[in-house]
Image (cartoon, rainbow, N blue to C red; front, side, top):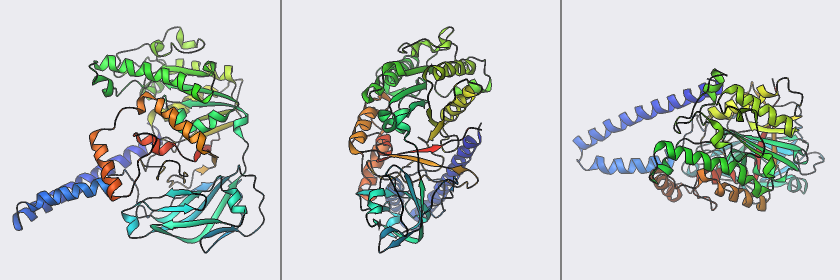
Length: 471
């Protein structure tokens, strides 16, 4: 298990332990109230406690909102002096900006009392809001990418809602090449990962490729409710998601011959990596042959010969695709920020496949569709900006690369997600009830694009990547 996965498991273990302890204490208090006051009072208090939990304490937040984010940025960042004067961020010296730079503003944010119950945010004068944890009291990082014109035109207004801005702001600027003018390959561990992370990037790229590693066939309860067995439901889901991985990128203009589905099995990459020549079958589809999920591919691949789900076959497939596409830019899961086991293995497989290969990309960009510490990140509503995620390891150097997405591309991205079969089923009843409670008591909004939480998280005015330096 990788270091990032170990950290994720440790955070989950601590969270569950604290939750069990809190539940025991609450039950004891209810018993005491029932015995000493009135038998019906514990029932009322239990209902109120549950509503309060769903409204304000159901988020998976594995750190204190008072913790400072601790970033160590790459040394190539420019840091022009800025001041915050009467709520306006102003440059203290001339600065040449074209508008394509990544702009990140570090500042301290302190929640008001109301901000412990309603998500606090910073409103920008350009009709953007960037949201932070309830009860925030520490160093955070606003994403000002796309705000260069407002900054140069006399200052950018920043207004705290349910929070205050404290201390001296620090602006970091990264000048970056436009990777949309290069050959771009997006590595997706599952169908929809490419769209969630990089639809805006690949839809504007001149020569995009999408390579999906797994069929994503497990957890097919939605199809079991149609009367299918576990095996048949998993096979149907895998075939549908394999189709999605080939068909949906066409919405963005990606040629079908540039979309590849490798068809390996969901959550089995780590077992394959542990024994590279061992065939690791599907957990639910009762399959040990990956060819069922590769039938839509535009050209043959090395593993088509035997269909064995092995790590060595995965590496051979990746090398073949890399040599055919010769991408200058590879977009793949970030090795530290994204702890999902298939995402970790996907990144490691690509780096291993590149070792000794005659073609090497010039740029690697990492993305994070899942986080260790905060399952609501990016916080806030659809269409808003993406502030930097929580990070607490200053020993790891990070260099952000951010793209701004106009409204029409955000809309097309939302439609691409709507085509993905895995994002179409209704949420479980418990989550729907929780969402209603949070809308009423915590002021949260539902995405207009779809019910699944990824519509809120992914359809934003920013796509945020991180420049990776291969080991």
